Length: 413
Image (tube, rainbow, N blue to C red; front, side, top):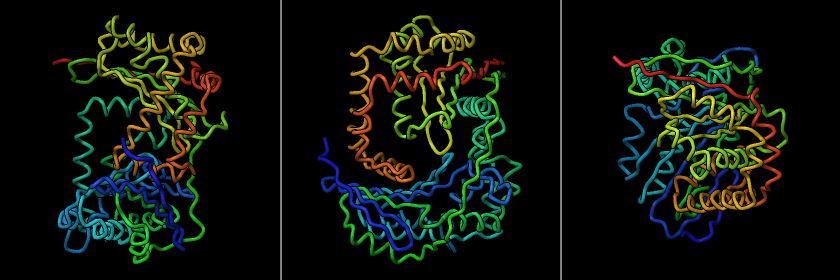
């Protein structure tokens, strides 16, 4: 078990925040820059619509520099690198046990100096399109997109994060650059380093980079959500059918913070369909689910939903079980004082265990920055949750009006 974590924070004059989590007994150093901009942010204040996939395209092309790829530079200094785009965020990272400050300079150069040309954008378009086509053959991905389209009809969250073959044609070096300068501002980003590094040295290096501050920050415009769809199904050439059950939580009906809400909904779902629940055993014994069964709670800027999914030979049974068992009455019966203490201890244990992973720490610290939440205070949030809180949030979540489903049926050939 790691020692109690300590965090040091510095904010530069341009608004760029640095957070260092000291882990002096770890050889590994993990660095990450996260930008508060993701795939759903496609509507601008003037009504202009950005092409789907533009956030992901920027993520790819920032690695391109005149005459080289940034990945080569990281490798030269002994680091592994990666990046990812989510619905609401984009992140760039490195992992190393040597040359942390050289790799930090490479990371900051990566995010602060775009090099978008017609030639390199055109070549990347084909690479990303191949990535999109590859995912179209993956049933897990197809099912996720389908259930999101039921939960949020015609919303950007139901589109592939990478876009579509059609939207890629609308992306060019001009709109990539204008979008970059709109969102890649120091106040809309933060830097996290986890490991044995010196905060003064990190701040000195960060000040070497001319991250331009634009004032005011652009507003992120969100469309009003359409009503939840009733559900649907389709066929695919797969060995076994898959089902997904979705729950949408409209955030205008609660004053809870997104962080607290996510913990509470996770506890509710763990009580009802988690591996330690009585109903999980019932689902397994009845042949409705196998070990692919899982649930995922997402709570981030403007969106909150639950997706429960898995392979099943009984798609209709899967849907019927979820519809009939995800109720406040069943939760109240299942959520005994003993059960509540168990799931709370499990949540605290997961938080403590994650502190052995610099990667997990860095990603959570960076994400929580945008929700004004201190990673080191999460245990206090978990510990403060009561049975009454879970019953209260269940009234918001466990409502048939929030439910939908999608079946991906096996079409063996």
